[in-house]
Image 1 (cartoon, one colour):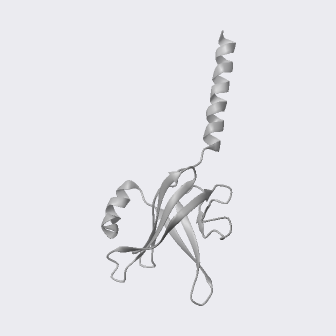
Image 2: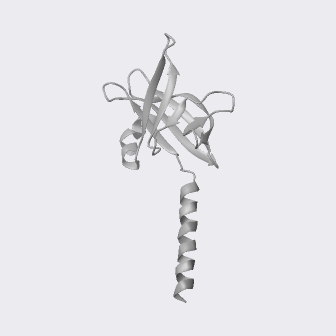
Image 3: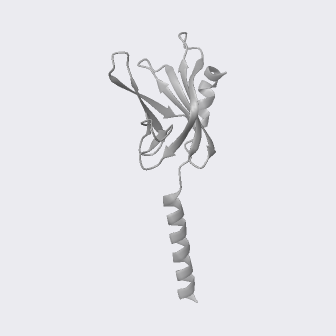
Length: 136
C-alpha cells in the first residue's frame, strides 16, 4: 500500500513539475520607461487576447510630462524561445524580455541611424495606481 502511495505521489509530482516548466508566462500588464531624470517617458501595455497573443500599445509622454499619448498599437505574439514579442514572421522583433519577464527592452533607430535601447519595468498594482493619472 505504501509503495503504491509513493508511486502515485511521484507521478503526481512529476506531472506538476512538467506542467510548471512548460507553462507560458502571462506577461500582461503595464511596463513603464523612465528618462534620465527618473520621470515617466513611455509605457508599454500588454493585454492577453489568447494563447501567447497580446494586444500591445506603446505610449509616449507628452511634452509637459502630464499625460501618456498612444504612439502605436497592434497585435503581437510571445516567442518563448527568443523571449520576444513579434508582430509577424517577417518583421524582426524589437521588444525583448529579461530573464524573469519583469522588464522589456525596446530597440529603435535614432535619427542618426544608431541603434537605441529603452527599458520598461513591469509595474505592480500599487505602482500602477501611482501612475494611473498619466493614462486618463
